[in-house]
Length: 305
Image 1 (tube, rainbow, N blue to C red):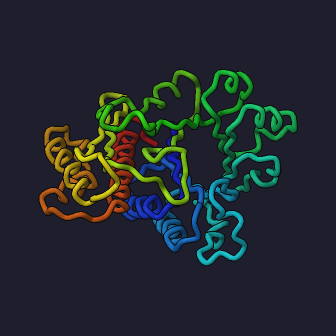
Image 2: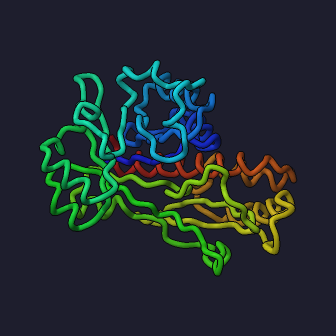
């Protein structure tokens, strides 16, 4: 069983991945995917950390969100690692994707992401569906009927509330058990957009509440607990709202099993004791680090590579 957590290359995503690479806690069957969205220094720094840790990492060569792909002269390029055997060059299937883009070499695997059934039909008719080393597809019955080769299911489990709902309406809930279904349905592995979700906005979006997200396992089921500020009336005072939310986390965490109390979760809880607001970017980074630490521990125990 493999797990490909999918990240858009925002600053806090990349810093979370860099932290994880430096901790060297990921088992070899957890391989993060980065779709670059910004030309920032954290991108090559993150790749360098994974290459130094001798851990595989996927970089999407043709990102389809933001204007990163349209920037001709990049200040922080990743191509100096393009031939490193630990760097898997991935592609999102588009009308311009060619078989050569996803043809692996003896030393370097490739990865292809197909978001739509019709695209897969076209590639199958063209005769190169078997070409990429890894194929990520939506977990749909018609796709399983079409694709006979080994594949990875890609699904978005993150939930964004609409204007009539808030995270406070669903404090604790189911997040994923894709690995269980993968065993039943014959997938080689699973992929998701972690707690960040598939939706991407160049400038983010405002929220009236500050919400901290922590994933945790209950048996084979991954659940998510949300700690929401009590003040949700307007968009002001993020610092005070953070303290309201983190106080709930600090009260909840000591009551949980040891596996839930990751170093990242403990660091978040410590901000309550310190009454220190590190900024929402740091909070998002630590929530992602916690998720990866949680998944690493689970996969190391249940799906040793």
